[in-house]
Length: 141
Length: 141
Image (cartoon, rainbow over all chains, first blue to last red; front, top):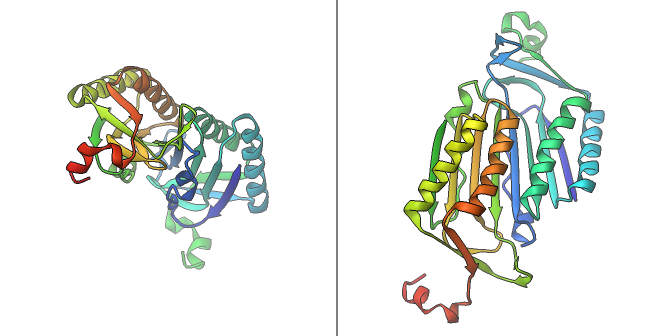
């Protein structure tokens, strides 16, 4: 199973389905995008800030996908997780799975998302207003 | 729940996530694309041909989505089913679901696909080679 994981500070651009589907052995392409909602713990928010311990986050995501791939054999899985400040309505994570049949693809999507929340060192917090973010301001963001 | 269903003879272009996600109440956007594989019933193929009894196919797909929406409340669901000759590696169906949380979105995707195969008057058959398709040839396709 091909595995590709990526962290980015830019808005997520899901890659096109690509060559893997044209080979003729994939009948299923499933995607999930996790989007920042306008409310966190019952309070309205404008954005979330995600922070990752990058080398470990990448390694743990790869390990989870490889392990799930043994139970649910798929052809290819790609994950892109955004970090930094993510405004409401924008994607924090995207996962795309190519598989022979839809059952494996759905299982991979949903089990990966469950494991991600438990085990991957990526944290989120309510992003503060600009006047409360001197560090970001001084960094020119 | 917003429901949109469509049949098309053209290659499927999944619409962008759109305004529904920017509203801030959707945390999940899940998509599934069913792709024609290079083998059908153990024999290699170059394409499948899908035929629909159109008014009923649209109505039944709407009914299934509305019924599933009672169990798995989502914000919006869009389905595009391609008909006609579909080459290996191209999409026969696309479904996109916007929901508050991923559980509803995943349930909607996978249960819709199961029901689609049972109840919707859309049939597929192995597409024949061009020399065996005088009707298509005379239609200039």
